[in-house]
Length: 201
Ligand SMILES: Nc1nc2c(ncn2[C@@H]2O[C@H](COP(=O)(O)OP(=O)(O)O)[C@@H](O)[C@H]2O)c(=O)[nH]1
Ligand SMILES: [Mg+2]
Image 1: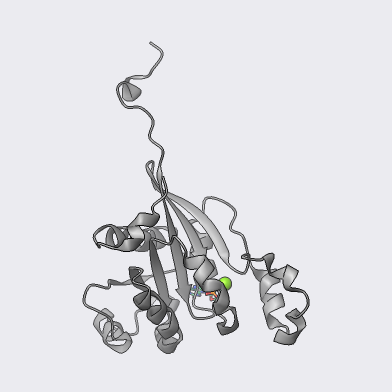
Image 2 (image 1 turned 45 degrees about the horizontal axis):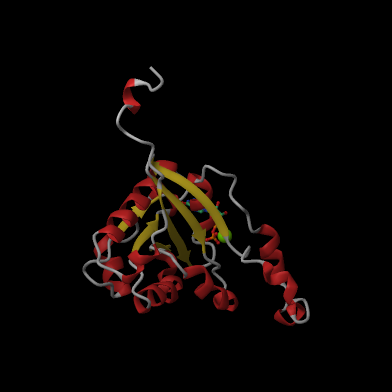
C-alpha cells in the first residue's frame, strides 16, 4: 500500500486561505493578538513605531521607506487543516490611514479590537468596515481579565447592527483569540458579501 488508510480516496486539499484584518485603536492589543496565535514569527512593528513617532515631515523625500506595507503586524494560523487565516494588524495611528485601502484589498473579514476604557478609539475602524461592507466582529479585549461593560452596552455604544457579533477576549491568550477568529470566519461565511469573491484557494 502506498497510501495510509486515512488517505485512501481523499486527495489532499489545498487549504482555503482567508485574509483577516485586525483593527482598533492604538494600544488596544492588536500586536498582542496576532502574536498570541501566529504560527510564524509575527512580523513586529517596533521599528515602524519608532518611525511613526517621528514628525510627519521627516518622511518627506524618503517615500522609499514606505515600501512598508510593513507598518503592520502579520501572522498566520491554521484553524483547521483545510482553513488557514492570514492576519493583518492595521496601524492604529490616524496618519497611516492611507495604507488601509491597500491593506483591505481582498480581506474577507475583520476583527475590531476594543478597549472599553477607550471605546471611541475603535469608531474609525467600525466606520471603515461598515462603509466597505467588510463583515467584522467586535472583540472586547478584557484588560485585567474583566469585562467592565456588558456586551450589549458595547453594542449600543458603538451603534452596531444586530448582526455584528460582539465577543469578549484576552488578546494574550491563544485559545481566546482562536475563538474570536472562529467567530470571524463564521460571520464571514454566513453573510452574503461581495468580498467572498476575494477568497483565494
Ligand atoms: N493586561 C493586559 N494587557 C494587554 C492585553 N493586551 C495587550 N496588552 C498590553 O497592552 C499593550 C499594548 O498592546 P499592543 O498589542 O502593543 O497594542 P496595539 O497597539 O494594538 O498593537 C502591551 O503592553 C500589551 O502587553 C490584555 O489583554 N491584558
Ligand atoms: Mg501594535
